[in-house]
Image (cartoon, rainbow, N blue to C red; front, side, top):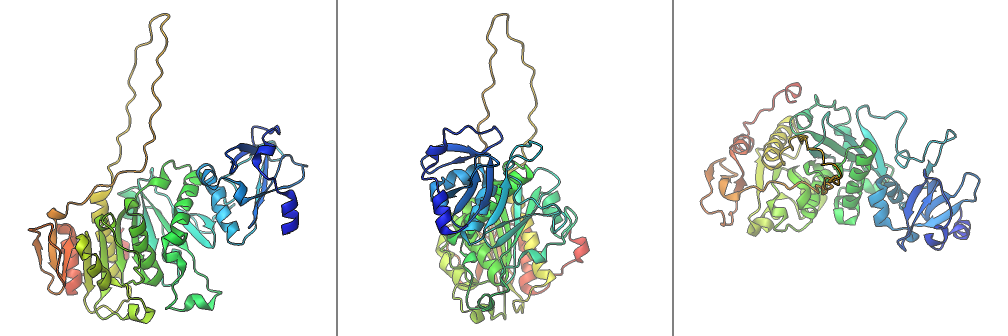
Length: 444
C-alpha cells in the first residue's frame, strides 16, 4: 500500500469508530486518545501502521502507529506489539487476524505460530531483525537461562539441537525449572557486520534490544500460555565478542531481573556499573594470553571494567584462564555452568508450595454469601541477595583464597571476590590450569 493510499484510509482517531457495532470475536485496540475499539479483522502490519477492516467485505482502514497507544498494545497484545517492531524496521507482515469461515473468533496469538517448528522442541518468534527461540521446561518455569554467544550474533546455533531436560544445559530445566532462551541477530549479507572493530547496536540494551527481549518474553508467555514468564529472573551465559557484551550490558541495565552471569573473554563492556548491578554475581573469565579485545579496538574489556567497578565492592569474580588465548573449550563452559548453578541455587526464589483448599461453612439461611477477595498480582519474584561478608578473597595469580575480614574494604589489584566454597573449588582449578571437564554426555 502506497503512502498516499494509506493516508487516504487513515482514521484520525479511534473515537470515530467507537460507535460501529462489532462482533464479540473482534480484537480490541486502544488509541492514543485512550478510547478502545474492537476490530474484527486485522489484515497486516506495515512500516506505517496496521491495516484493519470492520467487516469481511468492508474497505481497508489504515491506522498509523502514532494513533495507537503502543504501551497498551504491548500490554494487551504482546505478539502484535512484537510484529509492530518488525514492521517499524521495514517489514510488511501479514497478520490475517479475524473470524474464520467457520465463525471461529479472531486469535491474536496466530501470527507467529508456525505450522511445524523449524527446530523441534523450540518455540520461535521474530522482533525486528532478531529471532528469539525458547525451550520451556516440562514444569511451570521459575526462571530463564539466556544463552548469549557468538562474535556476530548467531547465538542460537550453539544450542539449537538441545533436547529438553536431557541436553547439556538440561540441569537448569530439571533442577531449577528454567526455560532456555537464545537468539539470532546475525546478518551475514552485510560485509560491515563482519568488521570486528564495529559492534552492532544490539549489544546495547538501551538502543532497543533490551525492550525487544522483554517483549519477546511477553509474546512467548501468551503464545505458550505460561502466565508470569515475562517477569521471571534471568541467568545469562555470555561469550565472545557480541554475546558477552550483550550479557554484561543487559545485567547493568536491568540488574533487578538478573540472577547471575557467566562471561568469557569479551569486550565492549561499555555500560557503567551501578550499586544495583554490583550486587549481581558475575563471573569474568579471561584468557591469560588473549589479545582479542585489542583486535576489536575496545577499551572496556575485563580488567579495566573490574578496576572501574572496584569502589562499588561488586560481587564479581575475576578468573584468569591459565595460558588461555580466548578460545572456547569444554573447560571454560564447565566452569561457567557450575558457577551459574551455584549462584542460581543461592539467588533463585523458592518454589511456592501448592495452595491447599480449605472447607468453609455454608452461610446461615438468609445471610449473604461472602466472596473471597481477589488475589493480588504476584509481580516479579524477589531475588535473594548475596551477603558479601560471607565470601572470600582470592588471589588470581596464586589461586589462594581467604575469608573476608572487612566486607567494606575495596579489593586490590590481582584480588577478587569469591562467593562460596563451591565457586572457590572450581575457580582455583581454573586459574591454576588444573580444571578438567567431564565428557559432555555426563554433564546434564
